[in-house]
Amino acid sequence: MRELRRHQRLQLDSLKEKTLSRVWVRVAVLLPVVVTMSWLFAPGAASQKLAATPQYTDIVPRLRFDYVTRNDYRDRKYFVQPMCGGVAIFDYDNDGWPDIFFTNGAELPSMRRSPPFSNCLLHNRGDGTFEERTVAAGLTGADHGYSLGVAVGDYDNDGFADLFICNLGENNCSATTATALSGM
Amino acid sequence: MTSGAGLGKPEHTISVGAAWFDYDGDGLPDLIVSDYTKWTPETDVRCSDSQKR
Image: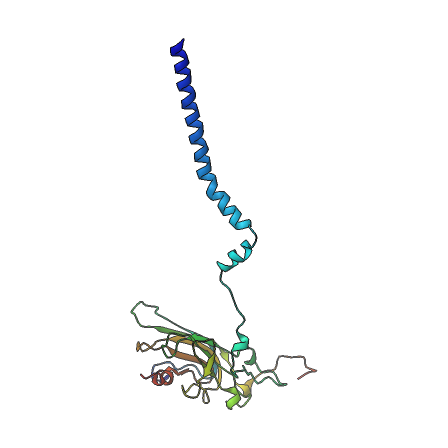
C-alpha cells in the first residue's frame, strides 16, 4: 500500500513538472507576441511605425532658382511644344551630391534660344540649396535649337558623367564642357 | 563632337529621348536615341478647330 502511494505521488510530481514546463513553453512563445502587439497598438505606436518608413519633407521653400520650362506657347500651337522639358539628376562635379539639369525649349518658329530659354544646370550645395552654373558649364544650349530629352552616361570613361541632349535640330553631346569645368 | 562620334541623324527629325547603356557588355556605355517624326516649325500643320487658331 505504501509502495502504491509512493508510486502515485511520483506520478503526480511528474505530471506537475510536465504541466509546469508546458506553461513555460507557452509563456516563452506568447511573450514576444504580446510585446509586439502591445508595441503595435500602444498609444504613439503610429508615429513609431511612421519613423521606420521613408519620410518626405517639402523643401520648396528652401530652394531658390529661376528655371522655368518654356515651350513658347503663346497663341499658335506647334507640334513640338507638348514634349518640352527633359530632366537629368547626376553628380556633374563628382562632389558626392546629385546635381540637376533641365533642358529648355526655344522661341517658335525661329528656334532661337534667348536667355529665358536657357537650359539650367543646378549645382547641389549639399545643404538643400542649389546654385545655377549653366553658363560656367557651357550648357545654356544657345545653339541647340529646341531641346527635349537628356541622357547621362560617362561615354569617355574619364570618371565624369557626360550629357547627351536631344534636340529638334542637331543633337549635342555637351558633356565635355561640364567635364572641363570639373577640372578634367 | 557629336558628328565626329558618328551621331548624326536624319535631317529635321525630333530627337525626344536617349539612354546610355552597355548593350554588348564591353564595358563601354552605348547610346540609344529615339527620334520622333520629321518636323520643322515651317512645315508645321496645325491640328485644331478650323474656327480657332
